[in-house]
Length: 302
Ligand SMILES: Cc1cc2nc3c(=O)[nH]c(=O)nc-3n(C[C@H](O)[C@H](O)[C@H](O)COP(=O)(O)O)c2cc1C
Image 1 (cartoon, protein in one colour):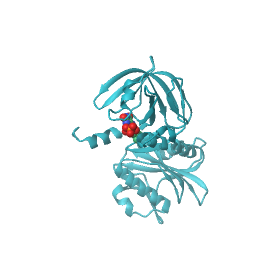
Image 2 (cartoon, protein in one colour):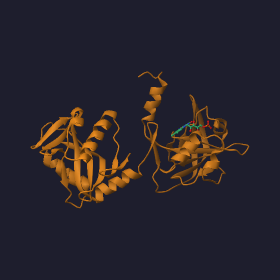
Image 3 (spheres, protein in one colour):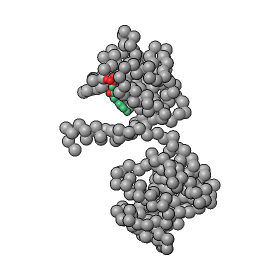
Image 4 (tube, helix red, strand yellow):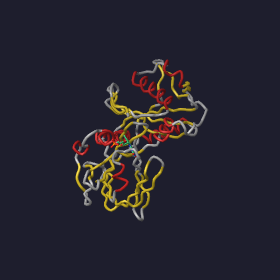
């Protein structure tokens, strides 16, 4: 891809998942300024340095170019509105969020995951941005989950952790979407196809049980992320499905491989399996897997 295609380059840069910060400073005349930034990077422990990159075109650029102090607030997963405010809102952005002053009178965003109060350590012009290196003078952080950003969209890890916890502690069954060379391992029954599933018998949780299921099927495998965690109304128990890559062509007894391209026409034994496999095929095509958390009928996909 040519570097002269700015949209393609922006998309490629945007494939790197980041957190979201708000960078703030105060002008010489006392005006508070701030912008949303995901160019935040930790740089050095000794001295403690961090980096953010304000664009030359920011209305507040001159303030950051001349600042002696600035601050970085790492946004929490429930602060998408703060990110949007500092990425676009006109007028007084600070009137739209809660904030407080640090000891250098630089505003910090309330409710953030971490705050860094910095003195300006270095300012390096770099193309259409400035590399603004700050020496951390004060910082604080807490246990909240941060807001994530990738491919022009926000994400959060809170639900993923909740689903992992349920998958680990509460699931009565574990199942697998086992893939080898664009084919899915399924089992044919008189009522339709089904996926490999087993009851969780150990107290070690779903992943350990899945390991033993996979060992029983033989061959080399790699267990991936949880793909779906939901409560089955019939049993009132949770079931967790993981993605698994199987590096072995050999077909275990009683199973068969079906090409992913044929799966939308295949009839599974229950509607939850049909819709889950459909989503698996779509997301495989798109190259981005998400997590479903809910019950058989409705839930959240992230
Ligand atoms: C998630 C996200 C990350 C951003 N990261 C940066 C960044 O690192 N540097 C930057 O200059 N602008 C970044 N922006 C864009 C600025 O936030 C936006 O251009 C700015 O708030 C506009 O402010 P202005 O109207 O005062 O010029 C980002 C926007 C979003 C939504």
